[in-house]
Length: 77
Image (tube, rainbow, N blue to C red):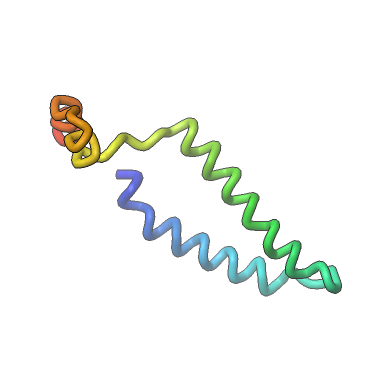
């Protein structure tokens, strides 16, 4: 379910990054560094989110590693 929302999250992130890049001014020659560093904020939030709510491994990856029973559990869930 969480993976299916990826497209929505990506679109929201794209819009937010565009607006952030457009409205960040007033730093002179440091504008590009500020815009570049603002990407660390959503990356940090995503890292925390992924550590709190880990995504399950895909069934095909589990099956390729010989964990067929666990793959079937993920499919049934």
